[in-house]
Amino acid sequence: MSIDSGLRRLALRTLLAAFPGPAAPGWSLRLLSDGLAGQTLFASNITKPVQLSSLTAELRSVRPDVLVAIDEEAGDVTRLAAATGSPYPGNTALGAIDDTRLTHDIYQSVGTDLTTVGVNLNLAPTADVNTTTHNPAIGTRAFSADPHLTARHTAAAVRGLQSTGVAACAKHFPGHGSTTADSHTSLPTIAADRATLATRDLPPFRAAIEAGTQAVMTAHIRIPSLTGDAPATFSPAILQTLLRQELAFQGAIITDALEMAAAVLAAGSVGAAAVRALTAGADLLCLGARVSPELIDHVLEEIAQAVADGTLPTARLEDAATRTAALANWANRPPLPAPHNPTIGLEAARQAIHIEGDTTRLANATVIQLDAPHSIAEGNVPWGLAPLAHHRLLFVAPPSEIDPSWAPEDRPVIVAGRRIHQSPEARSLIETLIKTHRVAVVEMGWPSPWRPQGASAFITTHGASQANSQAAAEALGLR
Image (cartoon, rainbow, N blue to C red; front, side, top):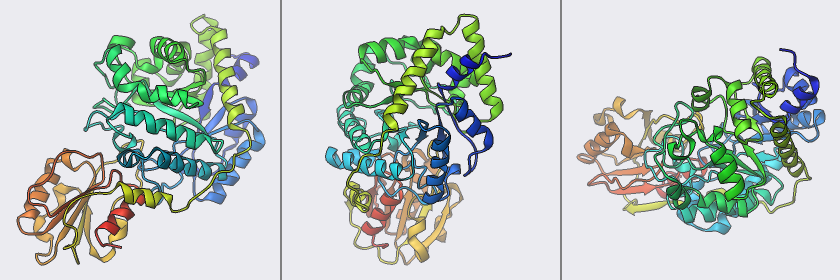
């Protein structure tokens, strides 16, 4: 359909797009010139700091008030350090330390990293309360299973990040922490009532709002008692009644990526999801990583049709564009100077290490790293002891492919993994090794009560970033 130029520009002001590769293609620059609100950067857009600085400068030369967004959570979710792993521990490690000043300073350091390369909107911190140990989407991205501890650290993270001039975005509202499914691949359902949300999931978001967070990201999760069959992203009860009215949030509401299965399954297409999100009260639509000119045209046509048939009031579209513009104005102020400690990440990771048992008798240990699947949010980022064990590393493989007899009988064994408690094969392998070897286990995922009987030591790192891994290697005498 033919779209009025004014309406097209208005709709573009509500879109957060993306593009492939380390250089901005011509179509993405033309969209910025036409009014596109901003671009989200992913690991595939980044090769090195000088390249990223050049890229963001080019985007800003086309649209001075562009929003340049990124998922830089530190810990297991990093885009800046996707090639090596983050130099900072993530939220679970910071929650385990429980020093809100340290959390503030870590996020301030992350913010400084972002301002240095021209990024002004960080899709962080994760404010979810991870109350399910088998949560495939959140895990070590969360500060804690305790709502009040999570609230304190969420507020500290927002203040630290925004002290550098980078806008924070607390996510995933109203809380993705109790799910057992990943909204990237399906539509999770939470059987919770309003009272449960109020005490379990909402305190960190309330704290983020009180700390001044410039944005809040929606969750593609279904809460039948409040959203019916739709995800929260499409629910006026969640976005307008709960977030706007009850929590009094006046900043920008950003959707989680609309290309995710949970949104597409519920709406039928990315364009239909965009319309439903805007109608429900969202302001800035994150389209995801796989964006093309054809997808943008599809989304714009769906929005224009919804305006034409009255499904999406023009006033709602204008309100969304106004709130997005306010976010862009805040985020495009000159960066604020902040102290920067290049060793703060490793220092924090060392504090987060929890050691049970004896690690002093592991000389010349063989290191086995249990390969574990990564979530879509994490991506395939290097992690664990493998990059640090050097000649001591025996292999990196799924536990089902490891024969315990391969471990030399005269040497201790260090077994590192993520979410070991969730894998019967991993637990069985460790229990078999314990019968013939001195074994230390390193859990680098979300902690659990599981402990293998007879292990010499059990080390919990509370994350698998480069910083967590280095701290664990030091504790085990591998460095």
